[in-house]
Length: 55
Image (tube, rainbow, N blue to C red; front, side, top):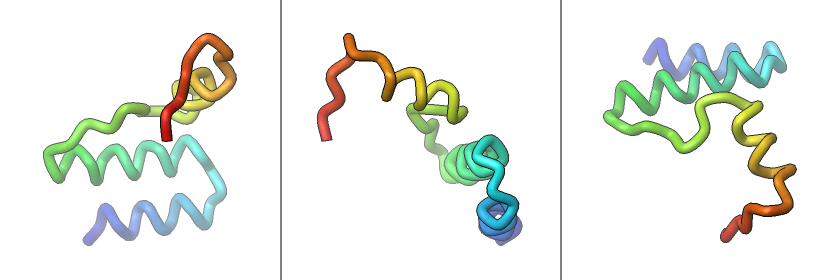
């Protein structure tokens, strides 16, 4: 439950890196590794015109 509270607190803080860390921690505790571990990684992919993103 602490991990969910951390996610909610990070949303309220409006700190995108803190939110990413909180979500990653929850994912790791559930046995998952997320594709992006930081906002910068996600942002780089979104801004890269050479990468096709399939939704």
